[in-house]
Length: 370
Picture 1 (cartoon, rainbow, N blue to C red):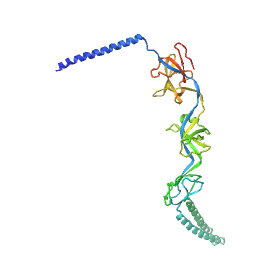
Picture 2: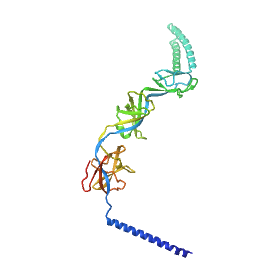
Picture 3: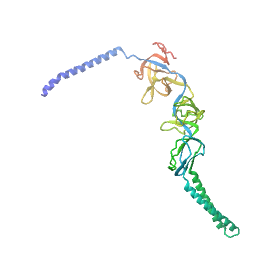
Picture 4: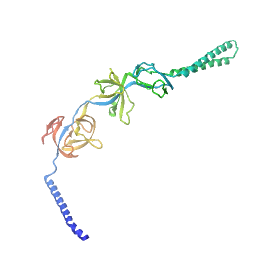
């Protein structure tokens, strides 16, 4: 059985051997024909002449409208709410009474001390008269006077505690929603309402790290908010002390200028920043940039050869990218046929591209710089 199996497989082996021999022969013929035809012709590509131009550096960021002051109002002492004196959303002045807590026990203690003070003062007056006729010693008089002063100090403490049962507005502003009702027992951790100072509004936003040195105190910024077609203006008032490590951005705060109608704390805002233009910026078509695992590269045309060059980029839009390092004015870069190009491969310039215009370059003639 084993011998018959080998005899049966022999024709198959012969067929496979013939097939490989045929393929090898075809490859040799193809290589020979390519060698006879000569080397592969240079890749034809469009080029762009690098030049400097003015670059308007504008960025758009997101921000948030914030109040000049915003406070959550809490009672200073625990107790039961006996009365509420404000309406939700009302504007109040500084010191306005907002709520009152039960102070009956404190006032009862105050009345008790008032009676004790009256008696202590009478004793102090008698001691003073006796001291004049040397009926008592100076020490006895001092003890009676000390008792009077101690009672007065205790009364001052109670008056302070009673004052804390009255919850008042810390500054003029607009109140929020009422969060408690009469009869509720509250503690210093219980919020009663919120108050926001609406007279001065600010806008907070963050800028990328590379723009942090360009932010100046007093600089004006423009912004818009959702649902409002107006363009608002703000002036930079302060920046954070350092760049955030997590986001690599700088926190900026600006005060809103002019009419603030239509703005509410918490509004989402779109901020537009305009920096000084760069009059010597190098800008290239975006299709010339080849992203790599580490950095970006560009093909530079040099004496008929495509050179792979590392570059660093800056601002960009839909059509062009700023190159900050790696190129200089006058360099010729390739903008088409990039997928078929290889480093140090021969290349022939087909057209010189300049924006939307193209200038044909005939073979054997010098290239025209636009």
